[in-house]
Each structure stands twice: as C-alpha cells, then as structure tokens.
Image: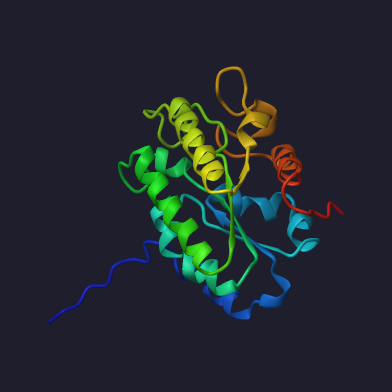
Length: 208
C-alpha cells in the first residue's frame, strides 16, 4: 500500500528545535499568535531579550492551528502566563469559513488547557482592520468589533486579563491608524510601541 503524508498543517515543526533547546526556567510569558506576534521580535527585539518572554507566533495562523500546537508551544514550556493574540486570520478565512462563535470556542479551549496546567491566560483584543491585502473581498471591520466584544465578555466572566489594543489603535473608520501599521493589518515599530504600552498596564515590562 502506498501511503501519502499530509503537510504539517499546524506547523508543529516551526518551533520544535527552539523549544527543545529552551531553558524553561528563564521563561515567564509565552506570546502565542500569528504574524503580528511573529513580527514583534523583529521590530522590537529588546522587548523579548530584556524580559522573560518568548514569542511563538506563526504568520497566517488561525485559532484551530494554534489550538493544535498549544501543548507543544505553550504548555510544554511551563510559563506562568500565555498572552494570546488571535482571530484576525480566522476572520480572513485563511483556513476556511468560520464564524465568530467558532473562533471563541477555540480560544475557550486554549484557555481551559492553560488553566488545567496552572498557566494564566491573557486574552488580547484583535487589532482593528477594515480590509485585508490578501483577501480584498472580505470586509472585516464589524467582525473584528464583534469578536472583541465576545473576547472582552469572556475575559470578564472568567476573571481573565483582557488587553485592549483595539481602542488605542483604531481610526475613525474602524481600521488600523495609518501611522501605526505598514499595511491595514500589521503594526509597524510605532504600532508595537503602542501595544507594549497597553500591555504594560497588565504585565511588568522592562523597556530597556
């Protein structure tokens, strides 16, 4: 019989070697997410080198992919907290159609996994966006608002930290302020500075 092997859909190999080599005692917080999280160390490397933080973002990922790699890229690293920034690629339907409630189900599952391993979940709002460069037929403006409302309500109901990047970064049309991004979705260096300032209200951060 000839066997065919599926591709690494959740990209479990992406951080496998880095995870094996990591000194777990040096990690306090894992940042889990998509390209916005992945790009953070590139724009502001000192944010991660000056703090006990590790980034585990993968460009283009959706919440079902993050859920599949949650054990490997979060639980196995034994952090005290995980900062989750996820959902914009679900709205863009990167891995197929999905509704806001299904996005929330995946985030709830990750939160429950974290809680079962004594890891505190920090839930972040999705950044504002009113268009996708790679999916111009989708208008995400209201879906982002709807998802953030559900994220905030879930965090409040479960005594979780909710980090509101959206309010600090949205323009009058419900999109990302132009000076904070290099396109309509992704923050630039100034955008990451805003995010770090917002996050510093919830986590101790060394800005050196």
